[in-house]
Image (cartoon, rainbow, N blue to C red):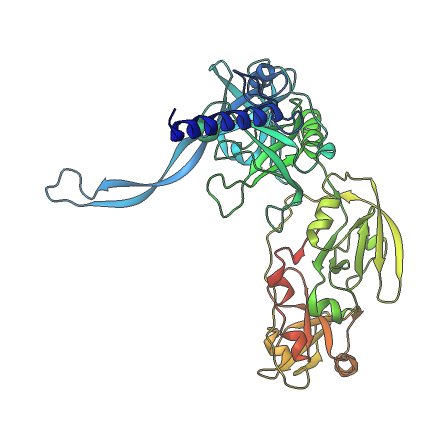
Length: 484
């Protein structure tokens, strides 16, 4: 046998032996794929426990909603040479989402944004049949809505989102792009994620693919239990980018059960408008950055006012939950009910103290739109560049602002009302001037401008190094918020 042929046979035998060892180490048997790890992979033949029952419980939700779209019309119908022009026309269009049964009797949970403003709602069942649905109740704050469909569906079982761990396998079921009842898989990537600065929900992050139409569908653990309601992908994305957000089952379950029982949610209300304490503002108030939130306004008829809480104090914790941003307060009160007790930890500028407050009922139609903020730029001039005069209303009036001064760079204008310096209310112009003179390198002013609904705290700084940092409201999307 030629030498080259012998060498080739030896090499082939050696390769076969190495392959056999690798296959044995991987648990491979002829005719079978490599065995999946029990905890991290899901068998291809059984993606989740009770798969068929889960699919029967999920529906595609269709909502007929008003839309504006451009249409082409003739300037003068039938006239030769007439030109087409575009004009807006309001019409109706069907949009799709997902939902799943949460109780017997056809009760289906979905996202509020799926059915908001709809004049008709329908649901497509697992067998393809399309049935009518009615809106039982909605909670826009958590973006959840409860429907009742004209079919009796098996309810999914709730799971414990608190038992999830990073890397845990999850499945998303829904109808992305109207692909009826599709399944995607992934793992948990994070907890307590924010969709934006105002959203109080702490979302579960996972990487199971979500696309338009998945909204309202269930996020399942490996036992087929609902651990979340798929709701969003990042605002910058239009389609799946590997970051998906789901409302935790603990929140979704309580909202669904309350809507089923009462048709609406009543939330507890403290009556506080707060702002994040970061950078120069924290220094000016004598606090560490991120240590609590600054109380900017107190509703005079609220439980907080009745407990003696004042603007200028720092709210450190609510029911044991530390405060760092307004969103923390919104999350702490998300599921609180009127009449419930809230334990507050505060700092009044001198010392910490605790107080218990019995929550009021949150007023209807709260305007939660973000209000304008005041910023500042670095300067090196000495003095804050501001003088005061008596005011016919509350506080003192800004009489003059030196161009280029810290006050000017902060956006202060003649006629603005300064209600407090630090945590001290101001009613006398001379006192205000003295307090500014006694301030060291930074000071916080509580300012109300004509046309604004509520006052704002801003920071003035003489130290160029301090003012060279970005304003706190630029660095934190939820720098201010309320009332809560």
